[in-house]
Length: 505
Image 1: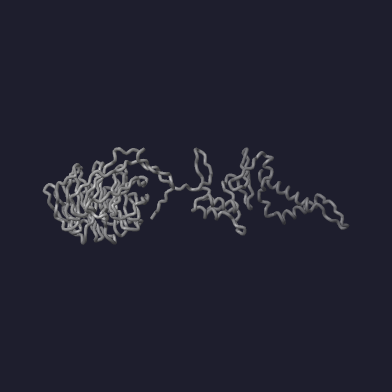
Image 2: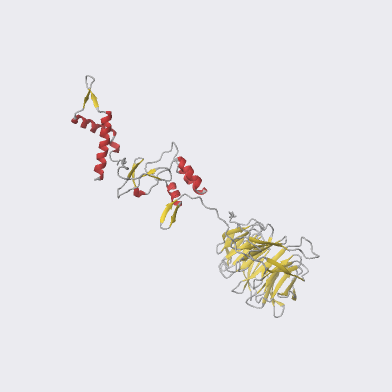
């Protein structure tokens, strides 16, 4: 029925056109005479076949929308749209192809409309938007849908409630969320006793004492509550660079620039095992939390995995091209993380003894790595930036910028306070979640030391996380604690929801 109506409409339009242009034939005497009905039908058939034959099969556009009660609508590009109303099917004649309302195909925008669309869209989609504007001489195949235009329109559809609204919205720049308030930390004790730079520090699991290693080649054990010296251990013949106390046995492990790794029995205060294998100075060590495995890192560009009991070298982790400055262990995968002077961080497969992931974002030496005690994340310190990463594949989270110095040490507590200590004696405290730097500390060097001897080589929280200990170049250990008198009113967070830029490299 619809096709018959459409054909009848075509014939009517053609008839009217012929009636206007060929209304009369000229007779021999030059006077116009009206056509008879039979002649007119023959002439119309010839005209219809010759000139209008290619479009006779096509439906015509409706011109009487207002008569049928349809209201004109204007889309976002300034074109008129004729929605279907009262159950009637509305057809459009667009570049030779009939499109129904059910096809959901957007009309092509004009060039000016496409340019305004490109300004409102994010930079990545501007190229696609510019492609949608047909140039003056550009040819488009009739009925060919523009995929880039469809992608642009799809990307800006947003849902509100149960309805879908199409809107052109610029992508909002990321802003730093409001950081958690942390009380400031203040210095309350300075412990002296070493005769050289204090290079490393560790707190025992019972939180009764802590141990330090120094350039004076000694290891000293201190009472945590009073700060008094309890014991000195001698045996290294060069600077002690790393110490750690086992949580599974009464052992203390140490390493130094003399290439030695020692296991001390704290019941007898003497060395019971040596771990031989490194070819140069040993810069750091860590114990696996669940198995009897010791991991050390060295200036010989390797890290080694040792069986604590048998002293055997299980694996030699090769791959770094410069000194390995720090190593950390955890029970989950990846179980070993190393940072090196070759600017890379490597996540290792403990079972296979091979590199799992290599992170190359840093541009300078990575001297410090710390694992968050609760979250499945870690941070690395370098002179260019402090970077936060997500396990297990080392996905980049964010940069913590502002500590413009050689960062030697990092530590973090379960409350989300990250501490970074640097070669110039500065210590910055950060909110882990947002990367907000809420405090900066630069303690004065002790009498008898040079101003240049203000470096911080190591820092650690005690087991209660109420005290922060730092090992420094002025031969002292400094103890910090939270300021109990501080409140959010006396020490407000100077935070503004300003736009932040997160560098990927």
